Length: 458
Image 1 (spheres, rainbow, N blue to C red):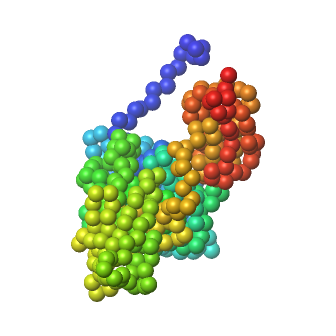
Image 2: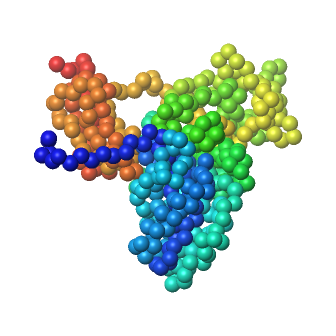
Image 3: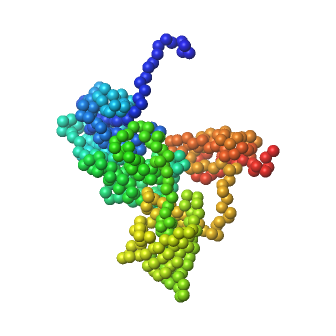
């Protein structure tokens, strides 16, 4: 009635959707498919972990999807690598009549390494050969699947803060030797606000899905990143998810279990003791790890972890033995054959960059040494100041000097790394200053808007 049109559009609602795509390759005349990838683990329609082949895929379903994708590519005389993406209804398992065309990406996609891993084909080489005028190197019947592969997208992003893209200089970057790590950055490089914040693609392969998944868990645990926050712990939680382990996946899995997947366990006392050792230079023998007459050498250090400060005290009993006091707990550290052990735990690697100390356990625990001379009251945050949470472009400013605002009102919009972030008033108040202008490029922590102090408001 509203449109003055008696026609009705009925659209199928898929209650258990899966995102399965087919890798195709054409030479302008004919095309082949290199099987499927399952990209159902998504957050806000952005892929997080991909795998090939798809769990539960049947030969009939694979043949039907592959044939459909090849027909689409050949119908337009497609040349090069492409991906035909489908939404699949997984309500009653995978069925040849349960997939629906969504779109075609006419390029080599981020997740192509999992296809390379299971087929043994170098897709970039194929791109170059076809671009040079050669025909397809391989016929469809010569292609086969070998084992299972996963790819996890490692990003610089602040997961507890709502997956905000992050920036920073990578003071340390190292990957486990057992994985394929496709990365465009290395230690010393800066993650800037001008590009996608992806650090690397972590790719593993195994003869079975279970073995490949175990290698993914091991590979993620072996990634060492310092200098910026990452989604590494989130990826580890996904790899440990029991439903994912069973292959029970759909595009809503992450949203349903987001609280459990983003829970951040605090460090243990021995993690803090290890960070304290690094902060005080006690990991290697030196003048600070000697002895004193009559009593052990005692030193204090204050560490900040996630905004919470911890007071630590150490007794250096000899170069190879220390006792740490953290609140009402103690940790004994002992070096045996050149390796430190803390309460029986073998010390993992540690990276130090200025006051920042990263302990490479539980996907990376970051501490910051607090200089007691710089403690100026440790204010609990200024709710009068609206700051940029990350480097970005000021897209809009809704605040005007003298304007009254209520808690939760939008005051500005910051654009960073392909996303827009609304900056809200933390309290009721009156706008005292607007310190930025639309289209300003600002750094993280830049003051944008200041509210008048509450005791000065009418």
